[in-house]
Image (spheres, rainbow, N blue to C red):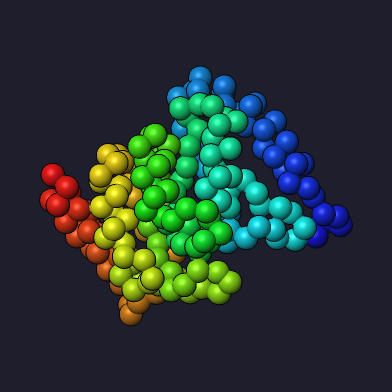
Length: 180
């Protein structure tokens, strides 16, 4: 617990102070900051509330405080899936909401077997989420950033990476074809 419990108000005040100092520098330098969700997105760990980047509403509030086109999300599909109902909005609706507002700067593409409290990272085609639907919504909202594999499970002779990249490429081509 780091010797004490922190309040959600302290965490939000710290974030507000930090982001208000960082944002003008990012804007001046032309840097976009994509904030990654808490991993895992639990409400509290070690006496520290995780009220900012562990839910849809937390992100809404955090992005409102930043109030900048340079502050957005590194949308980690795996973390969003880990959180499940705790996130307050499912993966597809969240991508649609933030994607339509150009707030998704990068996507971590990962699947898992089940939401918290216990989960196992899986290959993109072997979890509880249909990752084609994720790719399709990204294409539909006009996402033009980078989509990278995240936490690739090991496969014989190190072929997990090529397998994942090939699968992602096929999903992207199918989604582009279907939505064009």
